[in-house]
Length: 177
Image 1 (cartoon, rainbow, N blue to C red):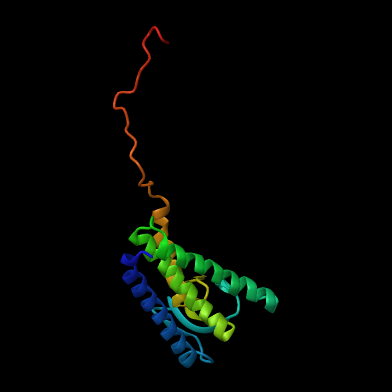
Image 2 (cartoon, rainbow, N blue to C red):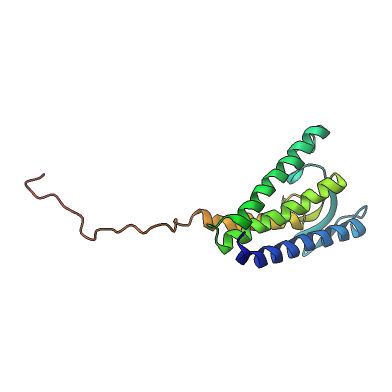
């Protein structure tokens, strides 16, 4: 295990999972059964939703057994792999560790809900005019933050061995042409 990355890992996990748990408990207590609350000229809406599916309720129409395997067991296996990579892969830099940890924290928090309640509590909606997001939660924000942090990493040049480049390329002589 790479112990140098453990403080960063634990900090992100505690803050992300903690904020998600607190906000979901608050949403259940304050928003369930209540009308939509609108803020910042309707840019942000707070609306309680119970999501039995995945992202944007995808998979909520599956039969119960298939939904369990696709939305619980498969994500758990993926999150275990992400956890292993985050803690044991020597080639990961701090940004990669942070991005994987945000994804892991959000995924674990939503899986916890799915296992304990059979659904995930969502309550945030953003947008303006007719353009709005789906309803989401803090765990979803953590996952998206991790994915956005990964984007620049995907376009980075590999930091492997540097290849020496000859400053004067050979140009064939008149006779060789």
